Amino acid sequence: MKRFGARYGPTLKKRFTKIEALQRAKHKCPYCNKSSVKRIAVGIWHCRKCLTKFAGKAYTPRGEA
Ligand SMILES: [Zn+2]
Image (tube, rainbow, N blue to C red; front, side):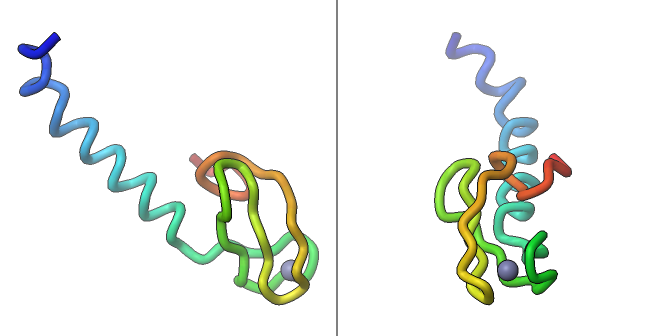
């Protein structure tokens, strides 16, 4: 398994960075349309404007990833 590290390491890191950026990006709330949605857990999103908690995709509220 160890010898695969060099081959897959960079790819995985790149993918992780992309996902991280998606997580940190501001997401629009489907209820009040403000970009105040933050991920509080995997698949759980929270809007700080209307205080709605809702289920979404793991990395984005609406599944762009
Ligand atoms: Zn909202």
